[in-house]
Image (cartoon, rainbow, N blue to C red):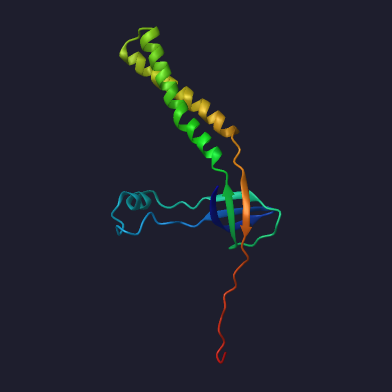
Length: 149
């Protein structure tokens, strides 16, 4: 199980839009590593994740979600392997069975990669991730000390 704590950014009806806390890539290199450079180049887009909740929540409240990681392996296998296998299969068909020239073999490999991508896209859209709400943390109130206490 993969667990992540997210903050409620906005609420619309029974749907809460959650936002992950941005995490720095590392602290050891003072911003000179590739991760820090890429994060500066491409920015840190804060994406909102919608989830339907039965319990009332408020903006700023923290929610811990868990995700079954067995589906992630299946998802990753389709995304990475289907286009690759499609490209290799079509290339071998063009080379060994049809005796095509090299430019046509490359074209066949590209067509196989696109076909594998479309198959992976279809299969991945059918995979449902089982998200579970582990805990909804209460809103923490700021404590202010009054003089004399």
